[in-house]
Length: 507
Image (cartoon, rainbow, N blue to C red):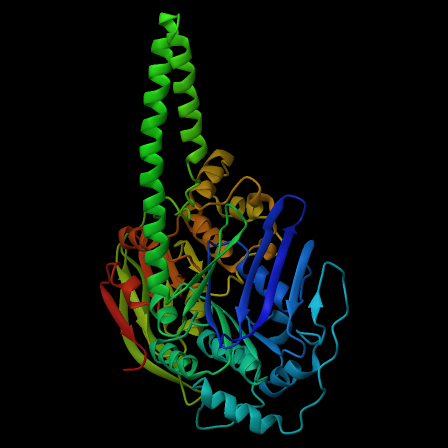
């Protein structure tokens, strides 16, 4: 007996502003117990789809049916800035006191409605926190309930986000890029949990191996048609099915195109001869028209960013960065270790270590030339790719942020670089804060190209980025001729980049 449908979209349309069409009369269903991948290009609207399911936003038209009483929780991509100063206890308590994500209504239509309140303060919250932190493998030698959220590393914050959804024990779990910032052990732990999870899951991720381990269905949000295609099967099987279908459609269209051209050429030849041959010419034109009507619209592949180069700052020579000591975190306490490293032009350093050991903290301090035991040579321009994009001005437009990075402000150069990173003429005037996380990442890379740094610092540059772009980015980093420090938990990505030295904070 088939499981019942717990979420159903019927002809749902949604627009972001007057010009940004996201969904166009989308219809699909999610059955109880399903584990589904939500695929789509950066900016296609995957997080928007989650917002519609949770009632955070309402559709322009159509209906979204949610099973009565269904509880829904979402593990967001990033912790909101307003929650970074909360203690861990207050952060989790807020999961139960904020407005409900799924009001107990049988269906939601285009009308706006107020969400019902959650159940109020949870008095055994510490016990629940202990249990859920065990699940996400965030346990240490001391209780963390009174620690401030912002004191955790990016990887540890990713675990807190996941735990904040799991602590609610939802019927439907929505995961938005849950592997971002997680180290290998964290991803393995999360995968093991999801394989055994008995309830319904929809997950957005660019990690193919992770997705294939537990999902058995795909919802594909097409950025070109604004529609959702639904497939059954594991992730790799579905990707293969889509590729085979696209290739079949291309071959069919190629054959039809030959027929069209041949019939039109014949029609023109017979028409010129006149007489009874004009009727033959008419029949040939009709055949050409029938062939044109038979052509199918092949799903356009996700666009990939253009190959790019990050130019290096001119007139650099000698040592650019000198390290004599590094500060790491052991059992939540700082430990300073002596380490001698010198980075010169065209030298790449890989910074390794598990979540929570202090990689991002060290990179932040180096980027601002405030790290104890490190010194950037005066005059060296630093390009810093921060994993949470907080060094971008979220209230500025993309145009203004990119223009501010340029030494010589040339608009034609700015627009050419932006276009290579799929930043359209429409998107270039949007506020940074309104972009998807993936689009922010592409803006950050465009900014580095325009900045022309001498020292490049990259903290998890694969986070949120469409997997199609990663080989292009890796090639650019491999060829970068300045000094570079890289942090990444994606071994396939790192393997594509020349690494001259490794600093392992764990050893």
